Length: 408
Image 1 (tube, rainbow, N blue to C red):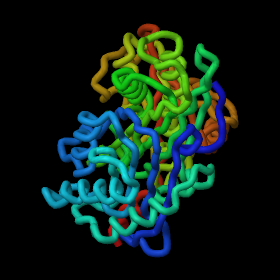
Image 2 (image 1 turned 135 degrees about the horizontal axis):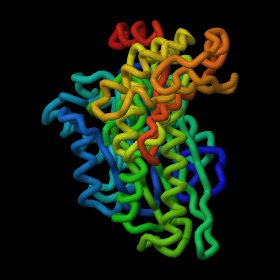
Image 3 (image 1 turned 180 degrees about the vertical axis):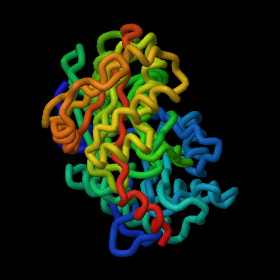
């Protein structure tokens, strides 16, 4: 596998575009489009929140019923959530506008929205945006980057990733992605939207299997604020233009493809966690030597969602009691008298807890280790052989400021 530059336009046959439709923001792009002239099979994972946005309901139906997806249309500013029948109708209207502009058949468009809940989309502006996007499509790396920027809300930077994967028949498959997510990030599959394009030729069932498996260990292992969005969406489109022998069984090619998909998803997930609203540091937690994988995930996610722990990371404070406390209320069983807790960063590594009690460490040295843009906490549970990793961020004053003023 080779990591390359770019995002959704890196795979063969995909083009992207961006435009300012004036949906909610002024003076910035707020719509993006991704298109493949060749029909795509699609797979998706969506929010587990009982309150699901109209685009989530619409896309689940389209992916289930169609094997010829061509287009993704995304808007930022308004989430089209809690908008009733009218909101769902606007999804179909957006799709119809794209299909007419691009001369594709019905049910060939996936739509996604992010932004404020409860507001109806200004559908005329959306339709005009679709027309503008359809005339600006390009397959350049710059086009992909601009599309990634267009779907940002409180994000401070665009998120994209691309890799190349060799196949057994000598061909090369490419996977490229773009995403947004900064607040309301606690996926269970801010608003988390991720669009992954690939030129691999792969059976739809295997594409869904790969995505569902990968999401469990990547996007479902991040948290910024503990809020699961109404709009969480991760979709993969595959157009087959790489020319590889179709991946139709779980062999080496499927494993290599899945590994590439995992790399892209993990990279994007970490970028989302590190770009949490107001964040100054990526907070990585590894729970090791656990009885099973599920238990390891519970431990790791409990620590990254602890507001007191996140605040301590912001303050560069080695307040390890908060970490041990978060492990204790996780719901998973363990012996607190056996736990070791270690923190590390580019500035070094230090053991804070040994067998459930404070180790002999320097507070100044601990502060130095915690004063980094990426901090890793290793919780050794000493119960087994399984482990899991979760990603979050520190909790800052700016998180409250951003969300107190979000609708203004």
